[in-house]
Length: 64
Ligand SMILES: [Zn+2]
Image 1 (cartoon, rainbow, N blue to C red):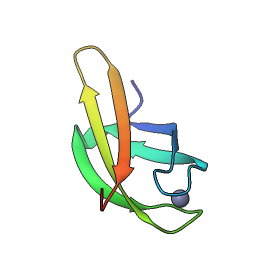
Image 2 (cartoon, rainbow, N blue to C red; image 1 turned 60 degrees about the horizontal axis):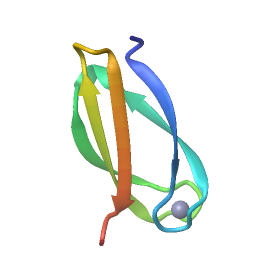
Image 3 (cartoon, rainbow, N blue to C red; image 1 turned 180 degrees about the vertical axis):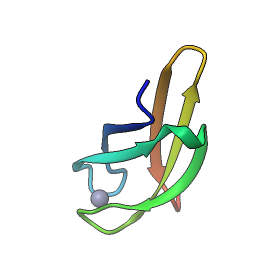
């Protein structure tokens, strides 16, 4: 699996579809990224399953 992937998600603040660049080489992680459309921070939860070669990404508004 390529370590650099892109995933389409919906911003939890403005619901625009945006493309996230993911670095799977760092493994599963949770981090904050600003939406390029509305500039609101969102919490990105990245789960990497290296054995299966799959990943899952989930976003939520940083302030609930
Ligand atoms: Zn947004």
